[in-house]
Amino acid sequence: MSKSLTCLLAGLAFLIAVSPASADLVAYYDFEDSQNAPSLSGPDLTETGSGHTLGVAGGIVGNAVEFTGADGNVLTTNLGFGGGGTNQLGDNFTVSAWYNLDTVPSSPTGRFFVYEGSTDYDISYGLRSYSDVDGFADTQTFTNGLGSILYADAHTAGQWQHVAHTYESVGGVTTIRTYIDGTEVDSPLEGSTTSLVSEAINIGNARNTALTRGFDGKLDEIAFWDAALPAESIISIYNTGLSGLAIPEPRDPSTYIVQDFYDISDNLSQGVTLGTNGDLNVDGVVNFADFRQWRDNAPASVLAAAGFAVPEPSTVVLLGGVLAVLGLRNIRCR
View: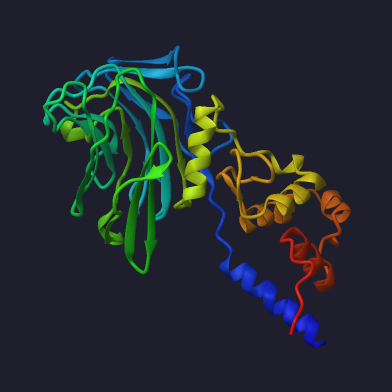
């Protein structure tokens, strides 16, 4: 084998090794009804109580769900993480949600929860008041065993805000990051991955033993990915909602075309609007995971038209295609 081909093979092995795994959109609730998007693997929502109305006008995108702050009222998604639940997000995941209060909390104990674990608070995000200033609400991440982080975030009733949480496990330690309106706030929480387990996640209220903390206002566009998304993805998710665009469902691979290959090449390592410009896995960034998605699922005729031999591409063709999609045509071994 020539030195140049050996170098290219080594480079390809490195790129595959360091490229991120695909982040799949598992569940997306637009609250037109209680159903998950049809093409996704996650469950539909379970409804408890009557203090909410689905399909209410005035969502950040389309309609929303309106909560009245009623006790015992909650929507539940049976998505578990850390080994809990029948539908697994795993130890690495992201949750994204839009919320809009009708009123602000009037006391530290009068908390409004956007979401919390159904049986614990290994995941939790709520709003409360630690200030005497009228109309001032604080947002809080609280995680069982790890403590809480309080953000002095003035929220105006009737105004939409966005929150995203990422849970990333490395070497048995989970890092939890909180983003409000597209920006990471404060320092992350860190703790043992094995201590973070949830069987399901409540939306619009706290855990099942504390359902007196119902949200008072609208929630919309809540979504879950089975990976800890990078900051660029969170910005993309936030901007997508601000633009009044729904989170798109992933495309059927049978619709993949050669242009997708070029889009991935042109936008590699770029943040984009969800599901556009080569973002096949709908995580808001174009990277090697999108190339894998295209390469492993595109129709044979499309792969052949893009220069990939089918069904078993030769080393030279595969390397040429990969290097082209990565924009590395000018790499030289020294």
